Image (tube, rainbow, N blue to C red):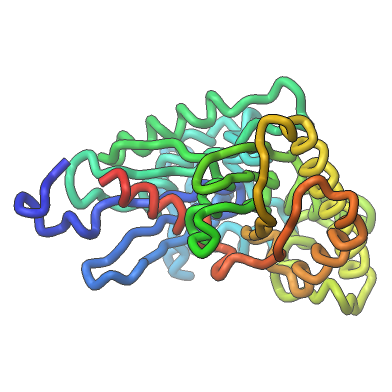
Length: 339
């Protein structure tokens, strides 16, 4: 690594890269000390090559290939919603999709766009990796981790895989000496980590989260998942649903919260004798799925129903200061320490 005398950029070296099923988010520290993020939707649609002229006319960004053109990111999601289609997703349930033949090519383009060029060759980049889901036996993240190591290395960085939920511990629990339970509720998975003084005690993921909510509501009401997602993200108050769709979202949000709490309790009981907690710790919740209005209150209410029997002493339940970017911030902290 460069020393401060060798390179004036040393104080800004290190990148965080949150690789989510719905969003890709990079974080870096600018020369003035501010943290800069860049986000792109992790979705795409393909159109016939003769669509180029109309796309140029509408100022829609696209990637031209031999036989077609790709619309990436938010523009892809908007176009899909207009035509009642579901956009294609290079990731499924938190990991590289096995059913999308174009996944690797598209992911390379997206990551390059969001991450940008390194300030120095081999700059450290910490990227998020989910834990293996405990509710889908046999599924691992080995292929997923290695795919992104390769892509990030090809972008000119030195890649370091880091647990997604542990990144929340680094970004949100400094006042508790980096002790707590971090919950990352993204689109594909819910990731959970328990740590004391930065020491990881437990990590796991669940193959249910935002996509599961969208698919469940869509199946129940005869809608497309992308339409449900658009309604959810347009602003839903889970404490005051105003129509049938929002009421269905509340039902499934409650089920998801209880599913998560039950698994946290069950997993901790398995290691209770190996990992003693001397004091109460916070639960910190992050991720796009947690950003619906009233989510924190709904989560807290469901937790309070079981507090007396919960195997972990919880001091408080709070949202991350910036739920969408908290994982990227925690990864950046680790990358800067690496540098």
